[in-house]
Amino acid sequence: MLALRGLYRLIVVCMLLSKLESRTLDWLDGGHKEVKEGDARLVGGKSPSEGRVEVFHAGSWGTVCDDDWGIEEAQVVCRQLGFRGAISAEPGAKFGQGSGKIWLDDLGCKGSESSLSICAFKGWGVTDCSHSEDASVVCDVDPAFNITKSYSLDHSIELTDQLGELFDSGKGCDFTLTFSYTPEDSLEVETVMDMANNTKETICVHRLVLSLFPKFVLINSSYEMEISSNCLPYIREFTRYLYTRTVTVTVSSMQCLHQLASEFGAVRLLEDIGRLFVPLLPEDTSFRTQVALFKYAGRSGDGLLRDNVLRYLGWNMEPLVASAQWKSLSEELLKGLLVRTDLVLPDEAWLLAALEAWVLEQGEAVTPEQQAALLGHLRFPMMTPEQLYEVPFTARLYSSHKELFSAGILQGFQFHALSFSVLTGHVEGQSEQFQSRIYTADPWSIDISNGGLSSLNLIRVFLAAFK
Image (cartoon, rainbow, N blue to C red; front, top):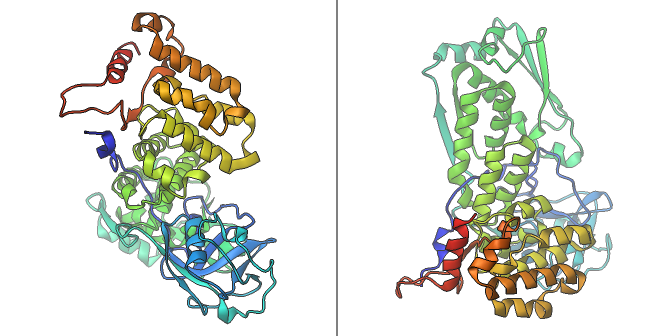
């Protein structure tokens, strides 16, 4: 039996994690990630997957006491942060002592909770511990996920090394570039090494060099632009690139250099970094960076990047649904997936169950109208009669959307009961519902050994001809 699971791991687009101490994806969120009650982060580790555990409560970050701190608690916090799981639970402030409140003590997690704050514990701030007992974890990441990889780009054929020497010398400057940022909270300031009190950096440049970039408009004798605080370590090497056309792009600098190249109209650098996204996508099997990259594509207006991310996620639907990221996907991303025909998944009934799990996880944050809009993208005609019959008894949202489900079930039974000639007379306007996706389970998969196609696959081929 040859199913289509071999399509997984194709089409790649990605950004990896930043070097920031905080265990967040703020570098992809433009440094403006909203911190919510119960959020967790890792601090003090040498890599983003390890560190002292801190929890956000009542407007401030606090630590966790290592009393009863074990692998179950470590599994919860690692999965809350989007990792595959925990390697070890570390007591005794292994990654340094925190400061301020110790929010949690005597935790009693089962290991299946979605966040530390819903495990059993004494009470917020109720503890007999000191910061020498701060709890830490080492989380499990895919060994292929390599954040040390770097890429050298050399466009020096356009300009000589003497221009680089001119920039380094700082002589003869007649123009000033100022890069500024406004820290939103203490966390953002802490994540920028050696820049705790700095909100601006000024670089002296030469007007003639900047005039080589048509998109950049020279006004007076200076120019100021706002950037994310995460980009401050990379602005000098980007500015030097404007002189030399050479720069070393790292995983951590990639998004910042991409943004700066867009601002200044450095087209070749923008295009080359865009190409570097492609071979990096499969290296994060947790799907955290792919989801963050989708948000970045939306903010930057990069439609091609957005579509590439959706295509990759769609071709990896089964591992995506099984990951910690599925239940926290944005409604926009979920809609983008549901309308696609190139989703690789077992069958449409499986997609219904996955969608219901997402909706129920959101609770009241998703209105009944929003639920109905998402359920409306299901393709009931692509379910077998047996699956259609079971929907009223197994679908957890059936009682809340009886009319929608009933219409979909009727449409599905009509698809299986009516002749093809009758059915095609009324397909107009409902073409999406009658298009199959890339299904890997019977009866859609192809049996090469028997040399034939199932009847449903034949119908799929016929309907595609009438699209």
